[in-house]
Length: 427
Image (tube, rainbow, N blue to C red; front, side, top):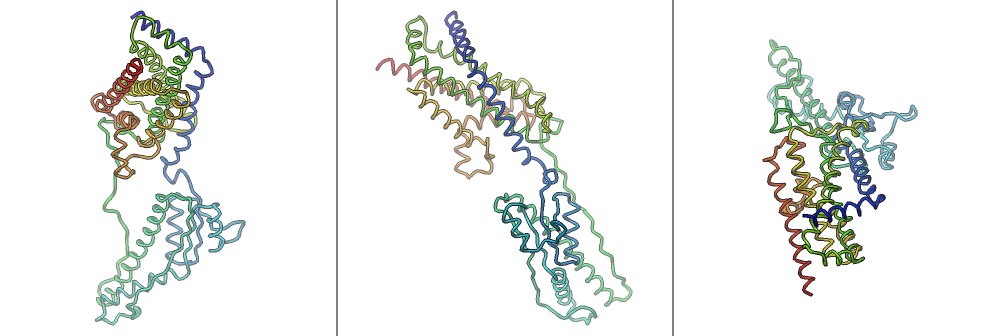
């Protein structure tokens, strides 16, 4: 026990003496989580909050053009631009403005677009009542089509494009239904003079209620902070691998490791002292990130982090993640022979773990083969555990499986380090 305490004291002295390194160890993850949360906050907001500019060229000046224009303005999703410097935008101008990236999207409604809809509606009604001679209905059966041109910035995301297309189709379909109902009602009234035309009234029988599923009574609303704090905290905690591995290699290079081996005790005692110190640093990282999410994020106009009621589960996940990170650092530091090896392999492998673990891209959108591989990423286990707590209201039993995987990973990494160290002794 005295050897372990002495080793811990030694590790603390080494860590504290490198004040610049210690500052970087805490400041860089703090900067990372702040920057990434601010950048990604827009992806968690509604389009209405982002307020994207859109070009609208309405050459129809009739029912369809008015319906689309009124719908876009009423939605308040976009900042509609129809004129620039008091001059109406043409189709050619719209294409150039979108192509140069000044606007994300431009909608061109052609002339006589409404007439095309009227013609198709009349053709359908005439086909339905072909045995009747209905005045005012043109005898045509051939349907016509007309194109609404949509200029899209190549840098625009697919999801945004789909949302715009869906809105336009909704406006067009609504107008077609109204026209068909009106003309159909008038046709019926001509066949049956006692029946007056019925005025079309839109109504919503089916409404959609969104509820974020949670095991707790309180509904948890996902936002950029709830997602980014656990994600980038996991990423930052695993980067403790680099200073830990560097510490082990430095001791080996300057002879400190050899002197420690000549003293009574075992390799595991020395390693546990390092694990204890760097686990403490990792846990402080975690606490700092929580404080940032609770107190600093709101001052930047971001949502406040909701920690939830299960503090014990949160602590268990933090310790399990910290142990997995420090165990990985011990393994790399024991196996690597140079600082360059440890830094390069450690940094790249953590980035790979993060990519597979869903830190940048959600796992559910990955290809099937990658989804299977992602199940072996320790960052995926940690991120899932934190999501269970922050977003799903999970308790200790819910995160037990993910925490268990992280602890097994820690034991495995420590076992690899011990076996490799013993193997080197026999050489």
